[in-house]
Length: 71
Image (cartoon, rainbow, N blue to C red; front, top):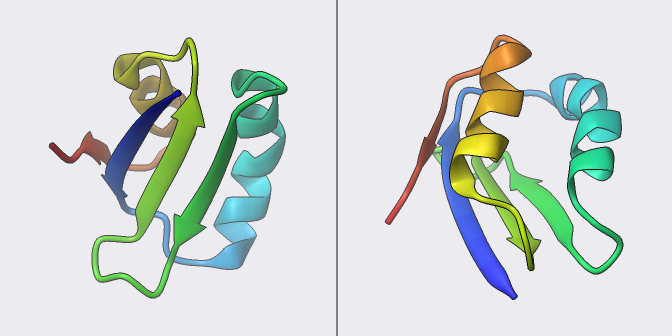
């Protein structure tokens, strides 16, 4: 399992709800994702066996959000 952590511009639960269907489709059945909107960087954490960081970043960017992988 690979864990990707991203700094995002997602700030509200309504924005998370907007992204939920796309993120659920993107993450296979054995993976998971969550946002920490209380963190100053509005962290998105994605656990997956097969996803690459650019795919996840693109999904958020295509929906109008900034997304940068943290290393």
